[in-house]
Amino acid sequence: MSRLQLALNVTNLEESIAFYSKLFATPPAKIKDGYANWEIAEPPLKLVIFEAAEGGTLNHLGVETETADEVVAAESRLRGDGLETTGIDDTICCFASKVETWVSDPDGARWEWYVKTGDAETIGGGGEAAEGEAACCAPTASAPEPVALGRGPAAG
Image (tube, rainbow, N blue to C red; front, top):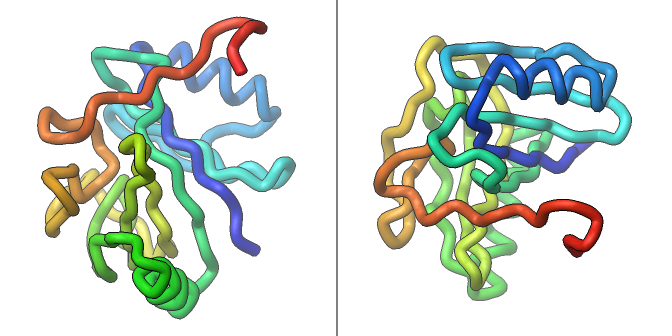
């Protein structure tokens, strides 16, 4: 089963952990310094939060797959459709060993297509990224400007 990933920047990790645990009635699967993630069954979602100076912003989006072959196939399809990807990377990112590729939409929203192959004790961040982007999902000075999320009922 594949599932979408939503990665957000938050200003207070503890408050956000409490909020999202209540929102999805699920405790985090992993908590690290400045980081937490959930593996939510319903709706099928991988939710990731990063403590950052500017909260309420989109860090990145992603598709978590079950196998590396699915990542390779997705990367091949994306390149075949003319999209610029980072290529396939076997890396440490977001406290996990992963096989992944990255692509950005026309407005700069970053998408990660990946499979987790193991746990890691560091957030990671090596590897090459397209057009100066951070190779890993952690907020960094070299990452693109955060994408602001809409606020309140008028947001659409």
